[in-house]
Image 1: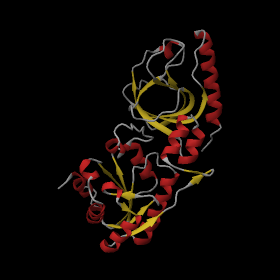
Image 2 (image 1 turned 180 degrees about the vertical axis):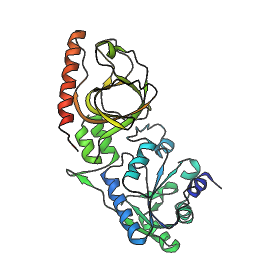
Image 3 (image 1 turned 45 degrees about the vertical axis):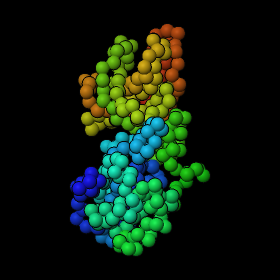
Image 4 (image 1 turned 60 degrees about the vertical axis):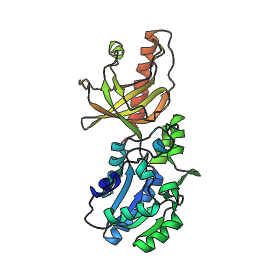
Length: 311
């Protein structure tokens, strides 16, 4: 049994599935349109809604020099997909064997192991070796194997097609509102709290220093109004991404000042939601000037975060 067969076999759905396949990086509005369709079909057919996703982006294998940053980690993707009401999320390892699998054989495995009765995809979808399994091909295979094909058109926001690429560009521009308009949720990531230089503590603003995966897509250097999630609770916060130029410029750090919070959280996982960018990072002429600006950042952040209400 190949690795892909082992991973599919672990799912063992109790009944037929309506499924879609993709990386689903960011779980954006375009993805959610696909998810809505598979949920509607699953309800109608008394089947399970199922998403087949990949542990790593196929481009990591197919275009290793591309080094595509990811918007959501695998765990985050699975949580977001489950939050959309998907019954079954199956993760596959995109390895050379899977890349070499012919479209017909891949479809056959989905039919055999996941009891696929319907496949819901975007109009440009293709699977299998050399992406030969396009919509037209899969319709023919589906007639033979006993599954249907449904295509869902792309979603547009302000006349722009929603895509992971468009979201990465908005993120790189620091436009958090645009990212949110494409995804329907705040941009966020999770990192482990690690030891820092404790400089913030001396200034009266103790921060949690986050260690994140090197492939994690990040907003540009700057100060952001954020929400910090730890221990099942949410706190208002201000997050700095940058190199702390007022002191000695060094490696990039991510520092989160959590308001009204004094617990020791070293080694814990912390999730940060980015609401809006407050300002660019800048070099101050004195520590006093920096502290004055940090006080203003916290005040501005509170005003922004308080205005969110129950959003």
